[in-house]
Amino acid sequence: MNDANDSGSDDGRIDNVSLYMETLKARMDPEQYDVLAKAVHETAHLIAEGHQAGPVGDASQFTDDVQREYATVLAILLTGRMDHRLVEMPGPDGSPGFAIVEASAADDPAKLQELREKHRHFVTEAAGPLQRACRHRPRQRPELRRLTMRRATHPRTAPRRPTRPGR
Image 1 (cartoon, rainbow, N blue to C red):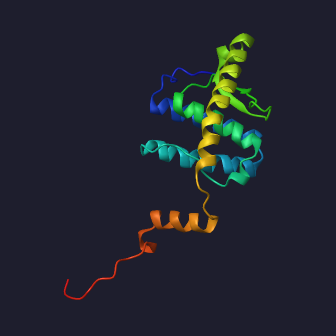
Image 2 (image 1 turned 120 degrees about the vertical axis):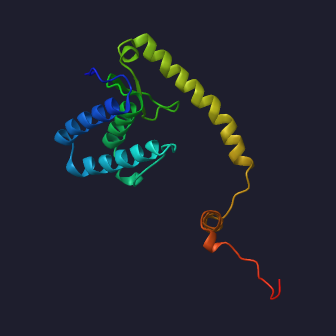
């Protein structure tokens, strides 16, 4: 599936993403494809402008299929390669999950098991300190949190100091 232009150049990456998106358009539900195309478009613009890619679009519209294809497209966009594979990567509690790995790792059961163990270990190690930190943080009422965030992001809503005449 790799083309000669997979060297990682921007043109090669865009060509590979375009090719993959065309195949998705032919096999995905049109509504799901539209959600995916919009998310990919927004993400590509964020990356091109030097921003960190983050969640885009309405999370409720990101079905499992859309999430999997979005992850695959991101892997192509970031690496320029099309030989990644999507594999099951359950959480430590057995919850479903997936990861994008290199084809060589996906084809090697021992390597794949090693990656799953590292993932499980990382998640369980990170979960402990995060849970403790969240427990010690004072809870804030949701309406106050929204107000605080709004003031931080919208200067027009921030309180203004009264000005005195003559100053």
